[in-house]
Length: 247
Ligand SMILES: O=C(CO)COP(=O)(O)O
Image (tube, rainbow, N blue to C red):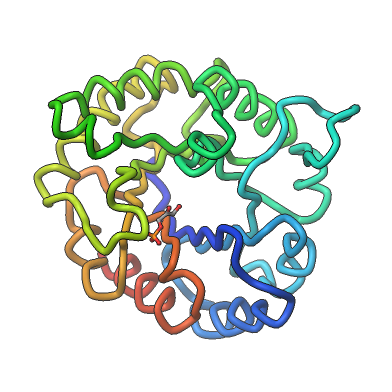
């Protein structure tokens, strides 16, 4: 089994009901896409988004709680996301690691909850600019992978996204060699953490745009992208999907 190609959009805290028209447009234009297409809207939009996706655009959450239910005001469980129509959940995004002090251990617990609810966990890792400048990138990624991936992870229930913190929303991207170096390390480390490492979908994220997508998708061990800003419109995200389809 080769890794599934995945074009994943993370809308972050953007979008209202009217924004779901973009999902209609994606579903219409990419009915026969040779890659999987995913939009992760804000939690309130997960259920209506699933109706708009028409089985062509899968829907995911942007976080879930590690517990299945209980007294956790303001949180959402993996089972609730699943019930609303989600198939995926993004976990450990650097914005949650920074804004909510999420640790690798908490992310691993959330991913285990996602797996228990039959969701595919997209586990995010990435170094800060200071860590890259200090030459720590590969150590940081290896440590985040080891700490954030729970037992029971498989190529079918887990996707890994490499998102350098300094490339998110900045218009800056690593060099091709830098992306390829991290993705090779991830593929290697996943053998002991997930098994069948060659089958795990690995995404790059951070300032992916229509103009740089094809070049990034041509890199070894890159099986798709986790896209922020450019996933908000069907025209930009559609161009990225077309580039992944052709890769
Ligand atoms: O954080 C990201 C996706 O999760 C990337 O965001 P941008 O594509 O806006 O840089």
